[in-house]
Image (tube, rainbow, N blue to C red; front, top):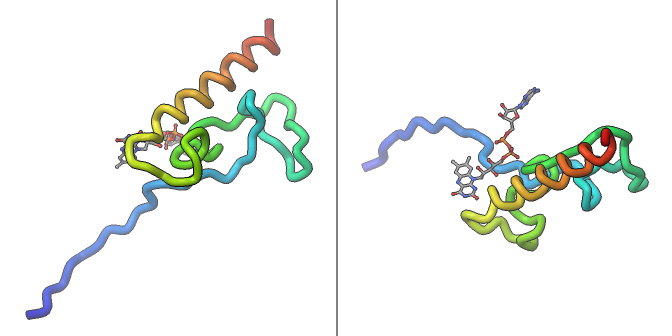
Length: 81
Ligand SMILES: Cc1cc2nc3c(=O)[nH]c(=O)nc-3n(C[C@H](O)[C@H](O)[C@H](O)COP(=O)(O)OP(=O)(O)OC[C@H]3O[C@@H](n4cnc5c(N)ncnc54)[C@H](O)[C@@H]3O)c2cc1C
């Protein structure tokens, strides 16, 4: 018999959007860093893909998110030192 299932759709992974350099600085379309603007974690492509390659393997997201946040924090600290 057919059954009805009520679904609640949500977005689980964004897989990025903002291009960054190795200091997690957000880049414009021509690759120029935007002064004082950083992007880390999923929004910068580190939730899937990123340092782990193009595939979004399970369990590989948090490491890249933390790594890119660390890079952003370190660069920001150098700027203000
Ligand atoms: C169900 C599930 C299971 C997962 N399991 C694993 C796993 O086992 N291993 C693994 O490595 N990864 C896992 N992941 C992926 C991992 O959790 C995420 O990639 C990671 O948490 C993303 O971190 P983030 O800081 O980039 O983004 P988020 O954790 O999404 O943080 C973004 C934050 O920005 C806030 N925000 C949004 N808009 C605004 C706004 N306009 N103003 C202010 N704040 C705003 C949000 O409220 C949120 O707190 C899982 C993800 C999900 C959904």
